[in-house]
Length: 168
Image (cartoon, rainbow, N blue to C red; front, side, top):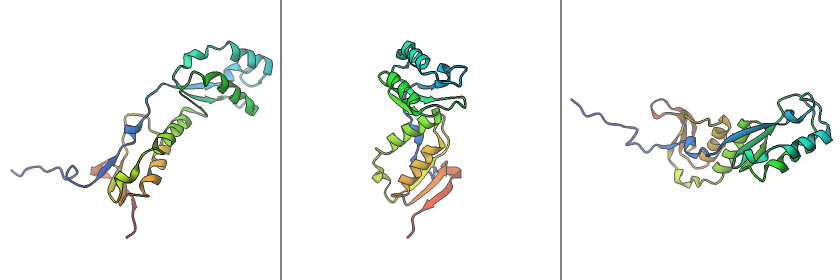
């Protein structure tokens, strides 16, 4: 019987797994509509009072996304004012959804990586993950990897889809 050889393990392929960079922390979405009259109308005095009386300490060390779930037309200062209250407790605050928060986190993390370790190597941008890696993180990663890599594929070694190959 012939010995089974793992050709992937013995190849020069490098795996770039975005899940390895997934930031730890509790994600929280704050909906501004909870402080609006009937969810739509911002009455400044009532809004300021509601923010003043809100327990902001519950967001201690959270990663926070501030958004409004209704079609309310809000002045720009509304989300800024919410930020002034939550920022002293939260690790990070962004305007938008949880997905926008994930994108901002990955932008920050991926911009700090030294990609020279992938210089002129074939890379697999791992596609399957157990953690909620946003599609935008893959967009950020491919832009950085194609600056240095010989080639970039997406997926798993057994079924990778070619994305990029450096011109000779």
